[in-house]
Image (cartoon, rainbow, N blue to C red):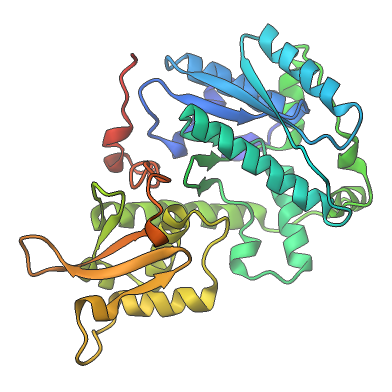
Length: 362
C-alpha cells in the first residue's frame, strides 16, 4: 500500500482496505477501540465507527484514565463527551491503586491492556483496535535495534495478536501520523496532546526528539504480515476445536510442515490457549517442536510422550475411530472457559476457519 504514504486524510475506502487482512468478522461486528483522546486514537475511532456502521455493527470506545496527572480525569470525560457527540458509545476505566516509582511507563502500559481486555471479556467483544501507526512502528524497531533484538524483534509490532479474551488489531501500522492529523483536520475535530509524549524521561520521547528513523520498515513489516498469513493458512487444516475447549492437532500433518512454520504454529497455539502475554522462550519452544513431530521414544507411546509448554498440556492420543495419532492441547490445570474463540478467531485472517464467527443480529 505505497499510496498510504501520500499526504491527506484517510478515507473510508482506504480504511476498509486496511481492515481487509483481518477478515472475516462476525455478521454485525462489534469492535472495541482504545481511545486516549489524542489524534491517532480519535482518528481510528472515527474510521472504525464508519466502517462498522456500514456493516450493521458498532464500536465501543474504551478510555483508560491512568490517574497519573491531575488533568487526566477531566480529559477522559471530555473525550467521552466528544465521542458521544459523534454518535460513539464510550466507557471509562481507571487505573487505581499505588503507582510504581520505577518503570512507570511499562506499568501503565500493562494496566491499560489489562483493563481493555477485561472490558472486552465483559462485553463479549472479539476485536480490540489500537492506533499504533507507521511512525510508532519505526520508533519501536529503532528502540529494539538499539537493544540488539533478534529478527522477531526487528520485525516490529505485530498487526494481529491473539489473546484469550480478544483479538488485538493494529490496522493503522502502514499509515504515517501526518495522515491521521489530516483526517481530524479535515473534519474540524480537536484532540488532546498527552504531555508524556514529549517527556524526555521516556525512551520513545527521546527518540522522537532525536528524529531517529528505522531503516527497512516496510520490508520488515511485510515479512511479519506474510508470516502471520502463512501460519494461519497452515493451521486451518491441522487444527480441530473440541467440545471441551481443547485443540486437536493432526500429528502426521504437522510433521510435514517446514520447521520454521511448525515453530510459529506451536507458538501461536500456546500463546492463545495458555493466555500468556509473550510467546514461549525459544529454547523451550525448540524442544517442544521436536517432541511434536519426533519419533516416539522406545518403549513409550501415548501418555509417555505428554509434556507441558507455557501453561498448556500436550497429550498424544489416538484419534477416535482411527489409528491416526493427534496432539490434544489444552490449558494447564483445568483452566477452562478462557478461550471460546479457538480456532476461528485465532485464524480469522483465513476465511475457511470463520464459520462460527457469523452471528445473526438478535
